[in-house]
Amino acid sequence: MEEFLEQYPIHTKITVAWGDMDALQHVNNVIYFKYFETARIDFFKQINLLKATTEIIIGPVISENQAKYQYPVTFPDTLIIGVTISEIGNDRFMMHYYTYSEKLQKITTVGWSKVVMFNFKTGQKAAITPELLNALQQYEH
Image 1 (cartoon, one colour):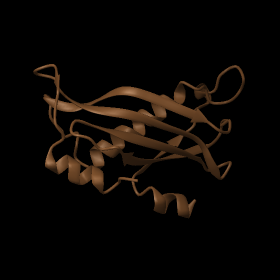
Image 2 (spheres, rainbow, N blue to C red):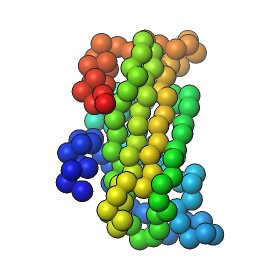
Image 3 (cartoon, rainbow, N blue to C red):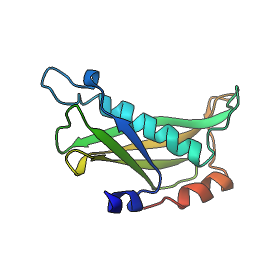
Image 4 (cartoon, rainbow, N blue to C red):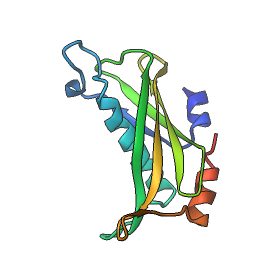
């Protein structure tokens, strides 16, 4: 686990809830997208993309989500979601999620999202600012 934490300096711990499991008694596939969302928001907070304001004019939106399930996860367990960045463009970038199970001691699920910067006032895509670009490049893989 130490190696995982070193490789993914921004990560989020999530405790698997009993209600996250489905009738087949493993974490339901759709729940991983909630886990990824939690990790994504934690990442954005840590790089100051989401500031404490009541009116966000420019912010991230997800245009695509994917997941690859490698091993089933069951309750009880604690997952650590590591995040990396790739394919940084003018107005978009890819986020990658690596789900590590403390119980299984391995990565169980990987996922990725295409994130597009969006101006909520104009309804148009927005360019990545130099500050955001610098922050993203620190976690680029």
